[in-house]
Amino acid sequence: MLPQAALARRENRGLDGLVVEKWRKILMVYQKRVNADLSVRILGVEFYPITFQGAMNALDWMMTREDNCTRLVVTANPIMVIAAQRDRAFMEILENAHLVVPDGTGILWAARKQGVELPERVTGVDLAYALLRKKPSPRFFFAGGKPGVAEKAAENVIRSIPGVRICGTHHGYFKPEEEEQVVEKIAAARPDVVFCAMGSPRQEKFVWKHRNRLGAKVGIGLGGVLDILSGTKKRAPVRIQQAGLEWLWRMILEPARIKRNLGLLEFAARIQLQSWFDRTREKGELHDAHSREQEESDTVY
Image (cartoon, rainbow, N blue to C red; front, side, top):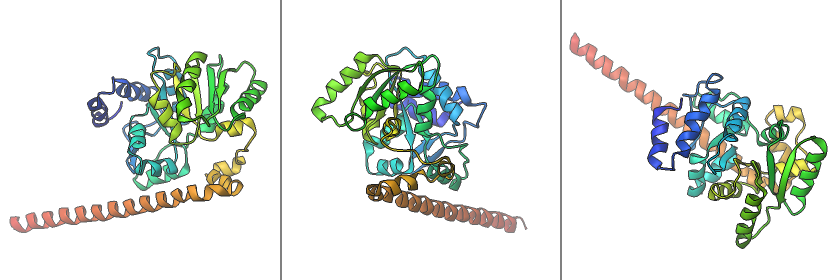
């Protein structure tokens, strides 16, 4: 069950009950796997100790809903958390999204600094592959990437995964005045799941803004996953993935990412500073408690 304080926060927002519904019911799906009471806020973004299988169970549940709401799934990493520090609208989306999973070893590390052990990384690319292999297949719409990337990704997936159903594609390089046409195209394709790979925070803002019009059950922000599915880019070797160094692999292959990845340094610095303040406050509280006990003892005697 979601902690009552968290439920109250969401109920007070009056978001037509969907946000309250998401955690009350979704957490019930996997509460036997983890202690759902141990959420942790990392620079203002709340994470729950969900496992990969728990996330898949939650997605299964989402796809049973018939309320014309596309539920937003965010695969959050440290750079996204840092971006939210400067973008209030994005922070509100992260706070209210239907499911936020920790995609990045930095998130797990930051949680440990606060004394909370998140079970594992739940990466967008792993969720994408697992969803694509589901039987019977949901209907997928690929939205994002450069022109031609989504189509190539669809071709590769259809060729490699028998029975998968791709109902439409569209690139992510559309102009603001073309956004309405993209929304209509997605809705007309009647997908169950939208893979939205437009880069963060644009992809999350797109799904959240149009969540009552896309017609899908789930919209998941997937960054560069369509590039991987299309063969345009390669995922890091398994050993590098297991070491949590995919970010370094991408930076080596794409030097242009170096400036963007400076956000990782800021993230680490902020977490360390927060940890230091927390330790200092705890020491102060312990000292005050000891002083009060000493005063009470002196009074008695």
